Amino acid sequence: MKQQLNQWWQSLQQREQRLVLVCGIAIAVFLFYWLIWQPVHQAKASNQRALQQAEQQLLWLHSVLPQLQQSGVSVERSSGSLSQILTNSARQYGIRVNRMQPQNEQMQLVLDDVAFEQLLRWLHDLHYQHGLRLVNLDVSLSNQPGIVQVRRILVE
Image (tube, rainbow, N blue to C red; front, side):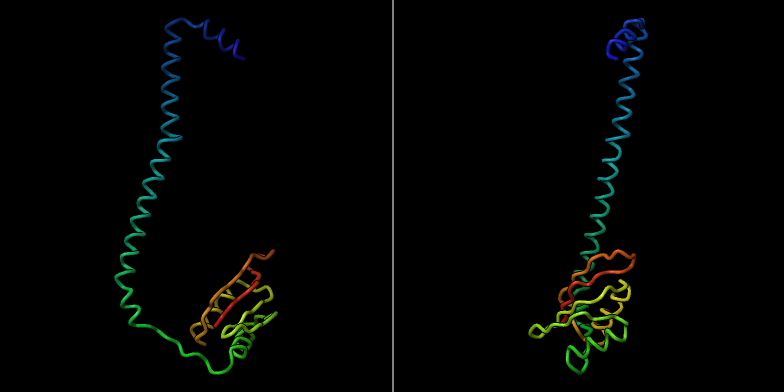
């Protein structure tokens, strides 16, 4: 292959060799620009825009934080024991509790496989309707789409 290329090169006239060399350099510069320089430059610009947006959002959040803290939407905790609230609420949402284990003022739950959206609605209800706070959640994917395995939920 190298010999064939060398023979081909030697068969060219000096003028043709310069033309091929100039074209090769031009193609190399073109490829460098379009395959390396331009994508890196675009990614940098995109990341800078995203950083500026995040900084603006952070400034805005810091400016409204005092107002949010003052408004302090607090939900009264439902009457009844923690286990009663969790059991009744889970039954209402069609969620099967596999295991429930008290830990001081908290309750640890293990659930059967559940639809992710259903789990989110239930957790939302626990917080905003019953005044419970989610401390920890350990979720993994299931073999079925949209279904998750809840290994551990810790609420107080």
